[in-house]
Length: 322
Image 1 (tube, rainbow, N blue to C red):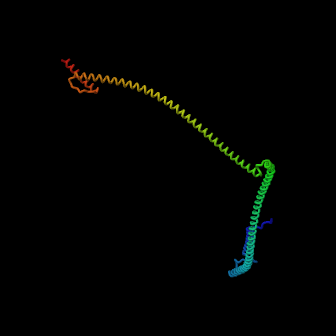
Image 2: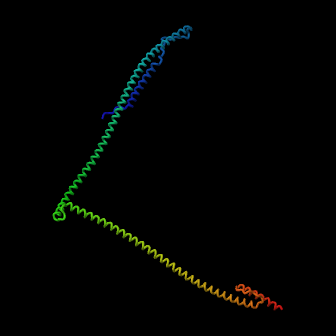
């Protein structure tokens, strides 16, 4: 592959460096030329301290003319050099413009080369992708072809194995007048196979149903056993409660008999007391001079008896006193 040309930035940097180098060289030369020339030493040394003022003035004017002449010569020299510098500057500017134009053309050339290289790389990447896809397709087709070859060989083997069955079916047709062609035998076989499949499916369904019924029966038996156990437990609990209730009833009956006996005794005692109180009340009423009411309440009767006894006691006391 050919070497790549320098990039636009490197070329511009190099040209700029050369231009700056030339500019610095011209500035140094102009500086050197612009330096004022050293005043030439006079050929003779004059001692003007001891001369007349007019002579000193003339000497001063002469020196001034010399300096003015040197200055004019320097100005003419600077003007010539400035004109040369201007011409060199114009030349440099023209060269710089030419260099810039060449840089622009070279940049365009580089851009075109970059775009061409990019297109070439993109095209190469696309071709590589297409090649890889084609290789994958070739591998898939190769595998499919191998699969088809394998299937074809298997079909050929099955055909070779089934030839004897064809011969057997032909012998069956020759031996049995019921069938005339092989498709009839195959149809009969398909019918029997379908019937067998239906019977197997029905058997499987019935087996599943029997298993389901067995499972339901087992669950029902377990549930009834649990219920029976629960009922037995409930019966045992109720028996215990019945025994406890019987004991409580017997205790209650005994308490009732005792209470009835106590009540009977109290009733008897009450009757006897009432009869005694009534007898005493009747006797006291008969003997008393006070006309008491015929009370039926034993308390009232006893109250009357008490008053009668008190009256009799007072009578006895009065009699004893007398």
